[in-house]
Length: 566
Ligand code: ARG
Image: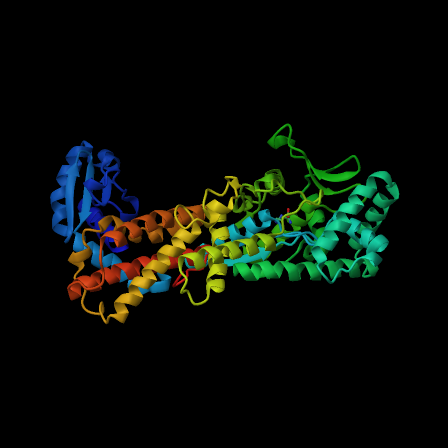
């Protein structure tokens, strides 16, 4: 596709005498008019003519310069229509030549993108919110990888804070009754809930928790720290089971505790910039100038301990110094909007010109059928259970549909987990999701299994044609020339990736794939590949293989497995 737009822009530049970079092509609203349009309005000033006259005047010269592209002036627009067999040949050949790297580029070479993703809290189960962060963040990272950026995915584990004081104190009191090594997270969760409840009627518990956290923050490597370390190790092990199933890895796992030694210099640096004040004994940065009701950013509490925000400020300075990032993307739920606004305002008040590079990539909530979950109340949906259930249900459906499938469990895991991942990426990320099994796992409609099924269907076409010893000859591209809507859509894939990365919006890719799969399935339903004239079978197989490559690459970037059979 790029080859055609390049040729058109070069011809336009030559005809108008303008710089190529100043010229932009559009997609005509009515596809009947052509594949690309050039609006002549911007030329009116320089050429001192009405846009329709300019369009008329340019059409002739452009036609001569552009072989295989029909040029037509329609009012103030120039419309370009690519000769159908040339379009088919060019798009299909470029997809098949690039294969698994079709759509990739090096536009991001030399630029670093930091992605803060997943970031669950130790001693608690990973929530569906953390799953969303993991899935969205990993997709954003893969999209940038494909475009040649250097990416750094950081898991900013929540392993610090006053709640660990509570847990340490709870283990101190009741630890003898529990078996931590066996099923650690539910055990810790129960302890936390119990502590929280009993704290109400017993102020000594509050004091014990505060004391434990003060000791943790003091840096002393004593019994408190040993308990904290054990909780961390056990929790990370549990999280890794989920990451493994999702196929997600991190470049860095740097929990909040990592920034311990950076906290003092961070606070000092902010104090030195002259923007701090003491309010009710706490060290704060007032943010009143950004809004009367905006609460200040607290750097240090009255008792001297630091906060979530202090550790995030330490982290962002550390990242800036290490990576000089182009963007630092925080893939965190919309409920933390205020927190990230506060952080950005602090950087702004410090006069740091890179502040706009810190971006909160927010997302909506997932509502499971059981209703909103709350850790405090102990009413919790475990992520492992959601994935197990997805896998089990998908296996059941697959076995019903395809009794001869060799390893239904393995495919069921691909489809079940893939369905949950796809569902998380399906809509604009800021939207809330109402999770229902029927919708997530449906094989028809806007779902992951539908896209995976399309991929498997294309794989099966290839297997059949190859088994019949057909499809390896010269392609007669005229045989697929009529499928220009589908072919143009395949050609749009690279641009979709660019846009999805720029907007940090994987749903642009999921929506594109859903639309593409509808086109593919309608083509497959009305067109036979096998048993045609040799050139026709070859061309149709080449188109099917191109479709398979694009669907497979798209699913890969989303982190959804692409089965060859299902
Ligand atoms: N652990 C936090 C939570 O579960 C999310 C951390 C997000 N990342 C960050 N740099 N603040 O709420």
